[in-house]
Length: 174
Image (spheres, rainbow, N blue to C red):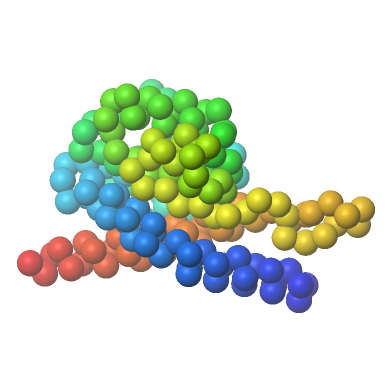
């Protein structure tokens, strides 16, 4: 338990230190929907559904958030937040291409680095990487186990929400 706690703490500290600017940029992008006539469409895949559940049904829901579905037709006023475990997730990439073709601004969060081989990062207006490449702990046969993608995404969600709420509060003062 101590090793797991140490590894999780290290992961969260790396995210807080290394992704602060990207978190603020994502909050700014999503805020655009709320100061206009748009919605925040949350498109999550696999275990990242935890973020959608938190944004919609958590103790402090995300203002203006709705679950993205394939039947939706996003407008220019909407902003989409796309979350997937991997940057090469086929459904996430298909959605990213569709949004880019329609000039709908979107943010993305995955584990992949924002490098030249990451098409999703290239298409997104803002991009956050969890940096999770393998499990945090060694398994009994040498493999790496414990891949807390959803935990990292929930941490980032809370950081984005804090920044977004602060921006909206500041905006109301003017």
